[in-house]
Amino acid sequence: MQIGKITSLIDTLDAKLVVLLCHHNADPDAICAAFAFSQLLKRLRPKLSVEVAAAQGISRLSKFLLKSLPIKLTAQPHIEKADFIVLLDTNTVQQLDEWSKRVKAADSPLVVIDHHASHPETERLATLSVTDEEASSTCEIVYQFFKEAEAKPTEVEAKALFLGIAFDTRHFVLANSSTLKTVAGLIEAGVNAKETLPLLSLPLHPSERIARLKAGKRMKLTKMNGWLVAISHVSAYQASAARALIGLGAQVAVVAGQGKDTVQVSLRACRDFHEKTGVHLGRDIAKPLGEYLRGMGGGHSISAGANGIGDVNSSLKRCIRLLKEGLKKKNT
Image (cartoon, rainbow, N blue to C red):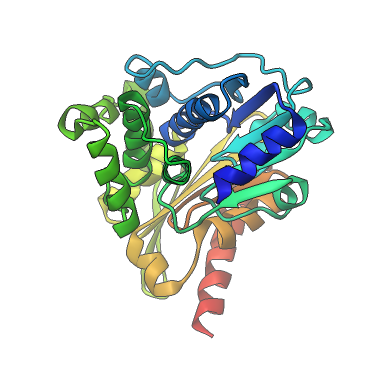
């Protein structure tokens, strides 16, 4: 029982403070999982103080959800004073930006709760790792903690978990049978799906619309083993642009963006691509791409990203090379 291992760690350490950390620009799955998990910890160990923080803040959609959820974020978490640290929906400490060095230097045990492909560095650093690639989201894993502890989520906790799962499954398009059972449990806990789902329908910002349109205008289309791969670049909203290219008809989309000395690459694919080729965008493409860029990379089977030091052209060329190599390996 995973939640039992975590509470045992709290008791062994006689922990007073735990710090829950989410990746930079934290999405709804990350912050909702952290919120629900913090509530569960405080219910199981009432004397425990819990801080929730996201490196470089949270996404625009996550900020919008804060209007409907009582999530309190700590701007400056007490990482050095924490009795133990938990990474949620964050498979590498590099996703914590400037906090990563502080986490590495801390003497506190590190717990990882995630549904992405595990990262070797994180595995070395973690005292306890609760990862499940089959889970739709980190919120789904946290819901399992509630079940293990025989603790029914409150209506607001259930609402948070529901939103996190709905976000990461694209409104349940990517949900499996386990996910749907979880959603049914959350509805029984009081979630009104009809009223809650629209909270994830945040209108596109004008600059995001422009980024999507520019990505389409600049797109180069190529075929790899019969798969349509769209390649483009925009200065911002790379992930949104990649999703838009998939919506236009591409089966794989790669969109890069240039910062001052950095580059960011977002990858998306249709479900058929992963199911029929076996290529995992996070493990097979984004992770080695991040290493090539001397940065970080990872993600899901059909949704991933990488960033580091480099330029758009070389990053896209490397990404295409990795895609070709991945397809070749899976076909041999």
